[in-house]
Image 1 (cartoon, one colour):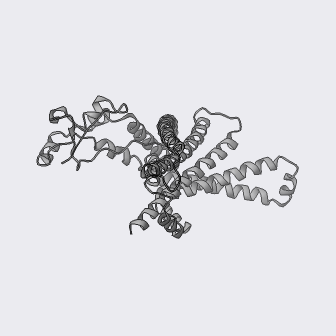
Image 2 (tube, rainbow, N blue to C red):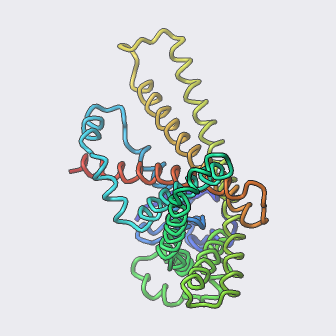
Image 3 (tube, helix red, strand yellow):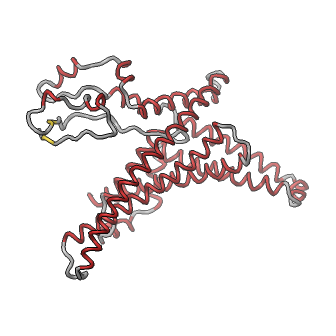
Length: 361
């Protein structure tokens, strides 16, 4: 059993910390943690895509790419062997990947319909009226976009299982392997108690997923229309609040990375002023260069996530506050932009996992 020094983080309050350690076991300056114990998954968010999988995909994209040294020749050679078709195959095997693929198609159609609507108001509309093909095409594409929307909603069903398991996993962690079974039985708490002490982002995710499911069942005709509309309204509010929280977290994380980046750049500048050449630079300089590249890569994906969150925020504001001005145009372009950014992150995540598997194999 290993011992580590535990320093309380500002992101957790005393109630949250008490779930993972106890002062009764403090025999020295460090806390003894059971390495076999499981911790609740990190909270996550988003409505237009699976909330949990959305943020998990972003975190995996940022962390997994930072673990690989992309400058190594072996990594570059292996990366060239990975085909785009293999990455897309891995993506569409998951409901999240299929959702992003359908979303790009859906909002590409909506963007086309926006342009078609502008053209229809011009003199060119006379040509389309003569043949009648334009109206038929618009009708087919509108039906296709609506069908893709329903398909995507069904792909997101039962996402409330992720926050539910996160809440159920919040049990007091035993510190002795011999007493683990008996201690776990004694520390079992009622679900309502766990619900009250669950982190707010997890509760927000649970409410979002449940309301989203009810709205989807209403679209499928299994639930009343009024109940479905109320659930959809609730889902929009959860999406709005979770997007704001994600933007704040993104800003704070970028601030930390930027400060670390400046520290590394300062060390590299001081070393360059000492007259160190490419042939004479030491291991510390090489480590700093790798660290700087890793931080820059991480910051790049955080910027991608921020842009995606901004598109989601604009989209949900039009839904939530009933904004009418340029409604169809803004929703079409923000939806397509969000879909492209999400797909880029998901593609990179699957490609990185394939790369790591090839390197380990």
